[in-house]
Length: 119
Image (cartoon, one colour):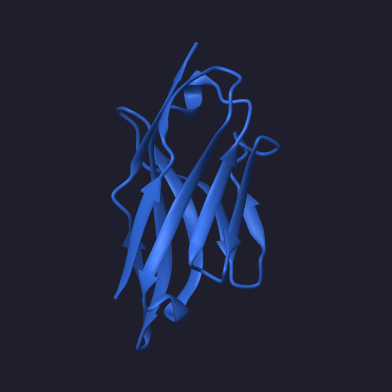
């Protein structure tokens, strides 16, 4: 089992920065990739950024150049550095891990952390 716990959300003004953290525990050696997703009010959950075991990263077009995903100590902790925040970045941010279980890959989610950006 893998457990994910996010932290670092809060209320900021437009132009400011936040760093989100995702602490992973349990069978983290079975994690293949991780990512950050967000869900804005009334919208579907969307991928913000992802990182693979090889360190490759990908970003949503809306956050390229402003957000940076990284990880520390293998899969123990994942971060999302968010700069130049704007009100459109408001939402609940979720940490997600792709976990290998026998022949299947299962998505594991954290509980989410709320980011609110005021104009």
